Image (cartoon, rainbow, N blue to C red):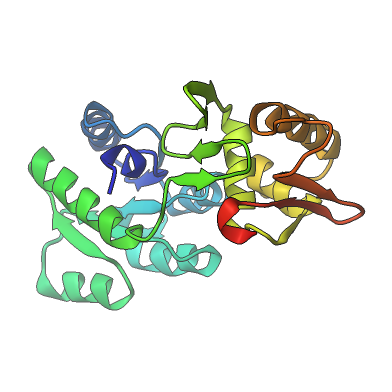
Length: 235
């Protein structure tokens, strides 16, 4: 698997120690991870998870307004993504409790930066081993790992919103994705009022991926319902 693809994954860090948060963010960024989000309480973590939809969460066990075990249960209600516990508590009971609730790994503070990076990389590789970062369309390919469109020798950058919209569509390739679902994918859990913005983004995406944007073959409109992405794999 391409390491660059792994390092595009959205990671949520939850710890009430700002110094530790800053250190872990620095470790991850120096290793090439780009999409890192932080929270200092369980309440902030739930809100941030709803906003950014993380693909990995790193949780402290002890938080000012609860514990990481309860937070894990809350996060799993929204989506099922891997979780690593990062805690000063190294007792076997805590390890077993975390793993028993569905955590993927448990690392005890203090830790070596290389150990943390190894654990995170291993979890991501296990969890996303079947994903293909290159999605073939009629006139191009989408490289989600670099947020680019490949058209022959051309490399066309995608904005963050274009990336999120195309990713949501690609996850449902060949199926209708409603306007509401696309707005939620790009603008979070309060997507109302973004329909005009969505149409503008769809227009710009078509300019990047279609041979003839006025006669789209890959990103098609399903009148009154939403949009559908036709990949070469889903024809």
